[in-house]
Length: 182
Ligand SMILES: C[S@@+](CC[C@H](N)C(=O)[O-])C[C@H]1O[C@@H](n2cnc3c(N)ncnc32)[C@H](O)[C@@H]1O
Image 1 (cartoon, rainbow, N blue to C red):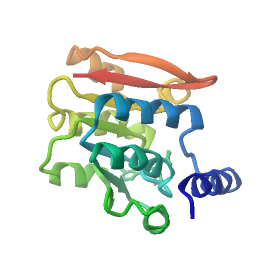
Image 2 (image 1 turned 60 degrees about the vertical axis):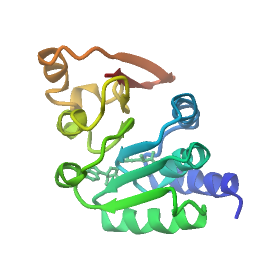
Image 3 (image 1 turned 120 degrees about the horizontal axis):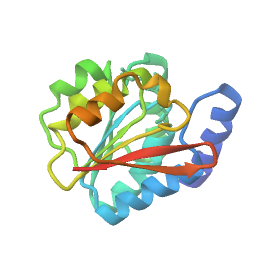
Image 4 (image 1 turned 90 degrees about the vertical axis):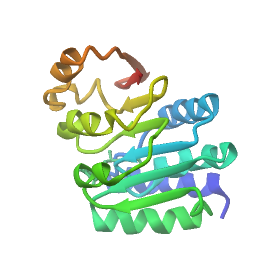
């Protein structure tokens, strides 16, 4: 199946089944960042059924990059594995089944791009866990920081305490991303 056709089927499935996949505008923005950056090793927290992972994987295949993506729901993980194979991106995307809070410390690599899209109240913890795995000049993005900012307990305090500078970009009409370049 063509990848664009698969993505449009996944979009439809997500709408019908309340899967909180990234929007098309956000996908375009994140894909462009991967292209501009020439991302080689990317980490995603929160795979769901693999919609965003496939979007990223399409660009990473061109840059020769790899995506590691973590999901703790076995059902979503199984769907993601199936969809990644359907997209023919199994050599580019490496899904990990487990709780990101446990899995991130086990990852021994550095990442040039981290996309945080897991449980919103854990966004601060995810950020803290990935911080030392992202070298200077590279990038971390947290999704949904406008709509769900109040759920992101302790995030503002963490940013302030560690004097982390960031931009909030209103990518969608009702939401946006927080971008940190180290
Ligand atoms: C917003 S959805 C991800 C959507 C996906 N990035 C996309 O756009 O297609 C969040 C996902 O993160 C998973 N998740 C939440 N907390 C997690 C954690 N601590 N470890 C691993 N997965 C987690 C949820 O099960 C859910 O599938």
